[in-house]
Image (cartoon, rainbow, N blue to C red; front, side, top):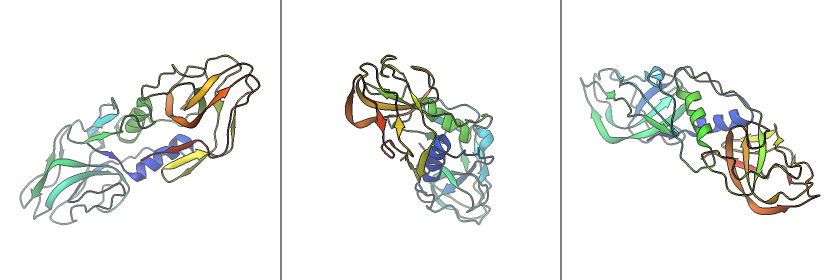
Length: 267
C-alpha cells in the first residue's frame, strides 16, 4: 500500500487553501532498491543496464473509491541488460527521466525481487495502491478528490473552493455528515475565510475568523470543519478537527478564532 510523499502533501494543502496545484501531465513509475521515504531520497535503480522509468498515467483509469486508487493495467519495464539489484519499493514521479522531477507517492512491494540480465519486470494490475489513511482529519470526499486530481488519467481536476469554517457541538468524521453542526438558530452561520499561512505540510488561519454575535445559545462548541459551502448543513466537508477546549456560546457571545489558532497538518 502506497502513500503520498512530503512534496505532494505540501502541494495539496497549498492547493486547498492557497495556491493551485496543476495536475501532473506525467506520472512515471520508478523501481527502488531501498525505501524512497517521504522525501524520495531512497535509492532508485541505477540508470544503467536498460533501466528506465515507465510513464503510466494511462493505467489509472478508475476513480478513487474509499480513499484508494490503483493501476488498472500491467506496467511493463524494459528488459534488463544486466543486474538492477533487488527491487523492494516503487515510487511515482511527475517526470519520466531518471533522477528528475518530484516524487508523488511511494510504497513497498510485498516481497523483494532480484532483477538480472534478460528479465523483463512487470507490475501487475492493482499492485500499485495509493491510499490516504482514514480518521486523519480529512473527509473521504476530499481524499478521493485529491487522488483523482493527481493520478486519474481523465479527471477534470479539483478547483479551489471558497473555504467556510463551520462549528460543531460534537465530533465530525470521514463521512462528512453535518449531524453535529451547530443548529441553524441564534444567528449562527458559517464564516468564509480566504487567507491561510501554508508552511511545509502545515497551515493555519492568517487573520482572525469572527462569527456573528449569537442571539441565542449555540450550545457547547467543541469541534470545527472546513466546507466548500456557506449553507448550513450543506456542501462538502473537507477537513475537520476538535478544538483544544470546548466553549459554551450563549446569547451576546461572539465566537472568534484568533490568528494561527486553527492548525492543519498533513503527515
